[in-house]
Structures are given as structure tokens and as C-alpha cells.
Length: 225
Image 1 (cartoon, rainbow, N blue to C red):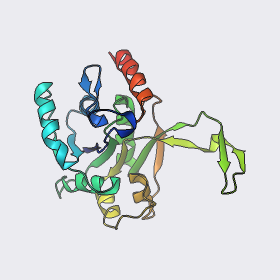
Image 2 (image 1 turned 30 degrees about the vertical axis):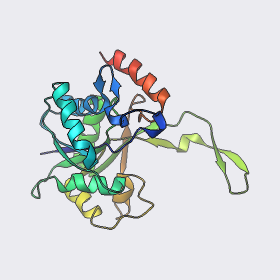
Image 3 (image 1 turned 60 degrees about the horizontal axis):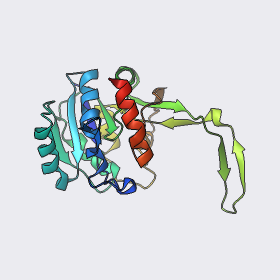
Image 4 (image 1 turned 180 degrees about the horizontal axis):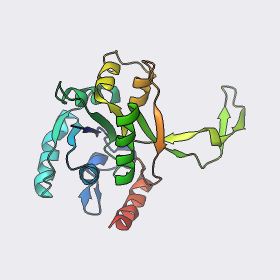
């Protein structure tokens, strides 16, 4: 059996929202519900694990009742860092599971079904996969003295989620203690000497972080329907 761990620990402070950003409404439904539904659409057999701060569990349960949201999932506590939240989600997977598991940002509701399936299919083959898109902006590298110069953007990729891994491999990687350089789950896996392969992501798979992102999300939700 394969799994998805959806990590949603944001507070929405940069958006000035009255609720954490994973609960903000897009097209009349909380962002996190859109995200869960997309993975269920991609593979109804996926085991879905939602990671939320412990003080948000009751609110999420109430939202699920209010919106008649019936997709089966389990909820586990978030941790001090993204590393610890991912680890808590990983611990919710049965010890004898031998498939692959994705880890996805709860506030990326517009990953496509095609990208999800591409990531899972490739992870079954190679063990560790991340979706990426080309960088389209001009990039400059700045040093501590304020000097800067252009860099060749063709060498760079913007990393998205879901990042998908063989379950046994991910468990091995997460046996080590947290380090500051663990900026995402792929960096944890790479630290044990495993190559992480890249697959094509989708440009709409944005992480909702700012008020502008929410305006874009409303338009993306309209085009999705």
C-alpha cells in the first residue's frame, strides 16, 4: 500500500488571516480539503495522513463536519520543525508497509493528478523523486559585501512537492537527528548518500503563502472546475 503525508503547520501570519492558511477558503472550501481531495482523485487507495498542530485537530474535525468532507484520512500531531512533522507522519504508517510514500505541503492544492502519478510511478522505480519546474526569473548571486552577478538560470530548478520515496528508505533517512541543513525531505534522504531523481512538476503547483497567492488560487480553482 502507498501513502501520502500531507503536512499543514502554517499559521497564516504573512497573509493576515484570522485562521491558519491551510483552513482559508478557496472556492468555498478550505485549502487543505482541496489538497486531500487531489491525492484521493489521483489514487483512491492511498493511505492519507494529515499532519496538523495538536491545537488545530478539533477545528479541522469541525470543518470536515461543516463541509461534509468524507475522504478517509488520519490526523497526527505536527512537530517542532518540518523534519519532525514528517517524522510523525512516517510513524503513522504500519511497520510492515513496503510501498512508497509522498510528503506534500498542505497549502499546495493545485498539484495535478498527472504530476502525482508521475512522482509515485517513478519513485517505485528509483526510490526517491521530487517534482521540479524550470526557473523563469533572472537570477543574481549576491555575496556578503553586497556585490552580485548574474547566474545561468538554466542550471537551476524550483523544487515542489510531493516528494516521494520508498518507505523503507525514508525510514532509514529519518533515523538520524535533525540538522539545520534539512530544508526539505529530499535533503534528509540525500544526506545518507541516496540520489534523488527529478521529474516534471506543474507550474500551477504553488505554495500559498501571501495574499497574492490567495487571489491566484481563486482563479486556479475556477479553471480547475
